[in-house]
Amino acid sequence: MSKHERHNAIRELIAQRPIASQDELRRKLVRRGFDVTQATLSRDIHELRIYKGPGGYALPNGNGHDEQDDLPDVDEVMSSFGLKVKQAQNQLVLVTTAGSAQPVALAIDHEDWPEVVGTLAGDDTVLIICPDQKRATVLAERLEKIIG
Figure (cartoon, one colour):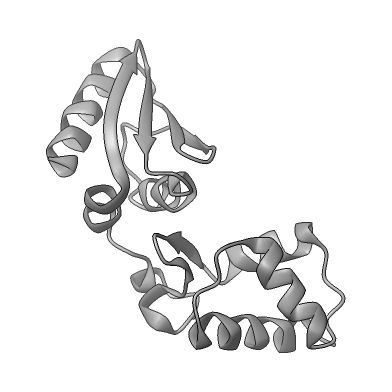
């Protein structure tokens, strides 16, 4: 089956009911006849801009199109999932709720802030690399205000 058909199946599965993990989604796809690896599924999730929220995987604005406007707003993501920010020179460690680091990092990356060189997300932690300590401080203050 084609990538397009697989993407449509992923959208349909996520729209039907909450899916808590990639493995659960992969198993559902296999039952539908898609031979999909975890690596392929990870790429699909990224391409479809699917994010993981408290209720499991979700489509941006419920439709899964690739439009930039469909991404959750960084304020929304940070206020929902951000817990605290710690600075270490030109780097920030952003602690999030469990399983939320990747959508938070994605939202930050898509802001194209000059203070951000790049992000690296784990499960509940985002490493944000800034060009220098001064801009890291500016960004830390901005993120702390959003978190509240």
